[in-house]
Length: 367
Image (cartoon, rainbow, N blue to C red; front, side, top):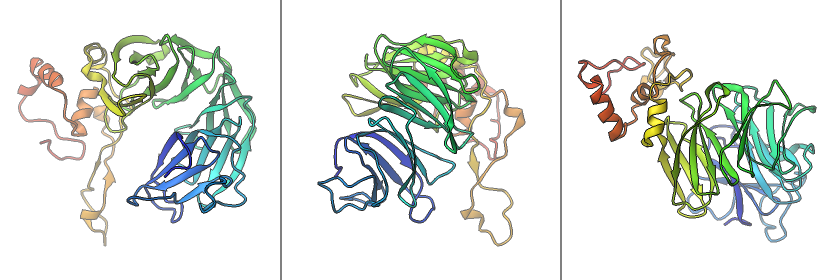
């Protein structure tokens, strides 16, 4: 059972005890502590360990005595997928903390914000660069090894959410509680690439497709999600879907599918949506080439000596001939079943009657 109401979650495939792959969940709550739960333990009654000072009512919990935790509720968490022992946290105490999950100690505390910290996000390429957003109406970027050099962007309202562009590692998006989304370039502090009035109420989430360049989705407490084409930093409205989740608090694109989004709100739990089921979205992005799609994984054709081929999995080299694949082709390569609308469209184009289907990237014929 949690010590207090949860405010944020961060999953990590890292076992701090062994340093190997794990299945852990970091939970920030209304209390100053961060709880780490082992999801592989069924019916677990307490966390594997807790970061931060003891809560008075949870004296039996495992806590490092010198962890120097937050003094108020933990509002956001960000795990570093490259430096896997590092976890960043932001709090209502106006600080950002950097934790070592293996020693369970706070490595550094950053005090560059003047109000509650709402978002922390590691860069996808520069592994020590951290982007933070707060209720002081700023997004701030810095290298955690040299926190004195800070780049700042100031907005007209409090920051709600941050998102890096997976295709342009130096570009980020920040949503605010007055309904706007801003794009910033890490190389140009203080200036915005564009500002977009996305919703009439607070934009609680902004997320980018990992497969389709420029495909952005925003979610709001106005109960809607909207799809935008922001390729070339020229935002264009594409479509809207009103959901039954009431006020929407979070949304995120799937890492395994071009258009599937998980959405969570005040009601209805977590639901999923395929944005390509929206006619205008399908029309706008169907022919968009994929320039940096994730690499499918297959068995290697020739294992090394003393290796069991059945136990080894390797990433297949990229095929330069596939540089202009559309998201429909990527769905096929990843063996994702297309929707009925997509099937009908492909039949209408005559693609189903071209004879033998093209081989996948691993040399294996498609089923």
